[in-house]
Length: 147
Image (cartoon, rainbow, N blue to C red; front, side, top):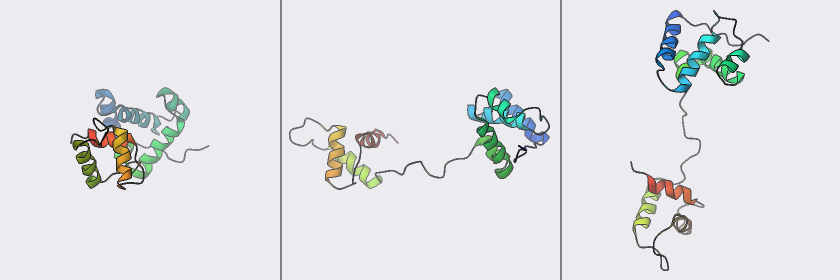
């Protein structure tokens, strides 16, 4: 099957990729993308996607995705990857609710308890109607923030 996205690198791009590989500049993903792009270049057509994938311990679909990103979005996007526009899951508590949880934690523990546990705080947050449901892990992450 003929390749849909053909990689044709300029000499400047090739030199940039070689520089990334030689100096191990950037993340390991960036270095691997640089290696894949160099091997996928149309000038060196002896490398198939399957062979490239085997050489760099990835799937052939990864090689195809990098090819596609280079052709459709450009050299920088193919080399550096793309940032997510939003986190994979939305935050459960907003800033005001987080402040209330922190204030609750700093206050007196309920009658019968020596101090607040994460699960007790999570139950109290739901009891007060701040959110419909919350896990103790969300409460832990809220309290752990040091920024």
